Image (tube, rainbow, N blue to C red; front, side, top):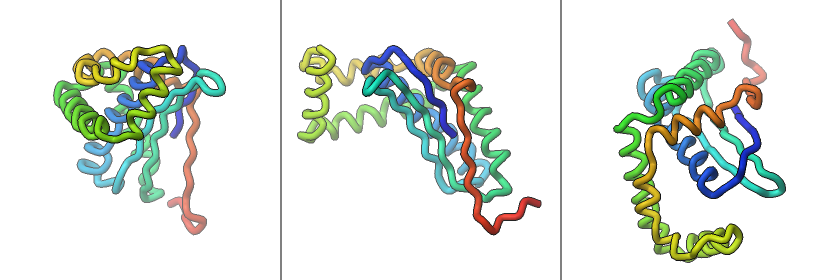
Length: 172
């Protein structure tokens, strides 16, 4: 499942897409794996770039029994619609903030992270000192941000669905 589109690129929008992907992954893992036992895992990713033009994408992928495809796709849309209507729950916000803080604390020690962030600072005219503001940036994450991002980026006019089934599968 892929949602694509264009946007007014900024590092902030890129981060929103990435976080929206993380929120949807949490929700789909809870629903599709833990409650429905329909998948072993779900991959969700959100990304935006300004190269070679301003574009974005959100991907949702999951391996499953071919007989379960339709109900699992419906569950994906159900969860997307919940985020569009309500944003993120307080519990999910806390999960995301805790994970982002833990990742940031780990990444801040890695040279490659610094090279990437300094490149962004130079490329987009951002103060290099802002790299150290990651805690404040993480604490700005809120439910409305997810709701707005979901309503912007889960655009059905730019949606593509690809279903791969085994050659031997015969639909009942």
